[in-house]
Image (cartoon, rainbow, N blue to C red; front, side, top):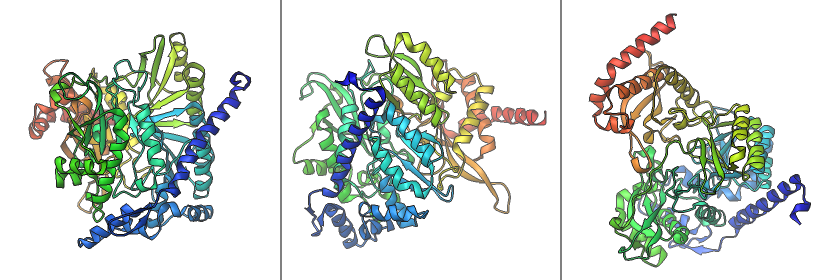
Length: 601
């Protein structure tokens, strides 16, 4: 029968079915089974109320956000959201927090509007969904979309009056935004090449999808002490950055003699929060892939019970682990599960296959013979409506209909036959986008910055492009170097895992206290097989001087590396920060002199 439908009818049916599935999941939020917590609270929020009561009984004072949840749970305030935003009203702090449960962020004073964040498990969006989201951005927002560092989409410049229709029209596309902000489990990430990567040990798409719907269908998993991130890595050529998440599941190949059945298992790592200078660490526990959702649920529930609700700066899973230690925490998880987790000797586990820092850009052969994926570089994640429509059309006409978003703020078209690769690349170029692999832009990442975020100290997206333009014009770099710019301590662009990481700062320029935009600059971060938190080399560098500082770093690296195989990270690790500063100083002086000369000319 399907051959009797037109292409438009098929797309409508795809959207209808996806929207119905999302609606069923979200409908379950108000129908969670009643529960009774230790303090006698009942209903779907019992665990959270009991945890709040326990901390008050211990002499702690709840933070405002915990009080706001208790005064009116955000999911019970949707009709009020609809009424108030219809009048053009932007929310006060309590409701600004509540509206984030629906994916809406009031970004004033940066903009007098909302930002909307979606939920796209494993970062995969269908062609009709991308077209639809772009149309909604044109109708309700600024006419563009941003790919985020959680392989997700954001829409910006949304007038308050558009809030309710936007949320409901988004669900018509089969996309939900619920729980994408505030104290909830954020968009679930997985390997961006899941299912098409010849190297991978595990296709993460089913695990991401299962966890995604597990969250959506259970209100008890909302209202955590703070936000929570979960990621699944299938050991493919392009990593999921699971080590930056509260929970990371890493696919591993277990051999004989481990005391468990050999095959593909998941290593459980916990406590990643790169903005707080920590990466997820192994727990010693492992699980089968089909056990991951139940174990993630138990971990989250231990966090619900014991996460700090009196200090937002200490309200992440990392701080429970720091206070308890991993053994005590895993014992609590096992108590929730009602069984022991498996332990496996690391000596019985094969090394993770290496990653490729260029795998998410350019043309690469898939595991399916005769098919390819094409990674498309976006200018720090921005996608116009016209570009989104063009990409969706290409995915439908030349690919398998999927668009894969990555944590590197770019996108991937999959399922492109050999015979169509050249035409696809030409069409991408005609959209003003590129499939070219360059050492700087392949790893250039920037958060929204102060152009659209009230927390940011600097205009990160603009400065990122200025740095890339400057470096490419002055340095013949021949190896991939990741440069991450984040505007504030929230570290949305994960500056500490970049080869070079910049975090926004206000820089004093005179004794009167006047300041300009600037950055602290860290070096030597890494991810996957080279996971490491970077070290701060310079503080309070003016944004106008940042391109020359990055240029000087790279010039010094090229001049002093042991050989062409030594990575930038390895080079920085050979030096303490004082020695590296001294080593870079001559190049920095030369860059400054050249800059002054160019300005004079």
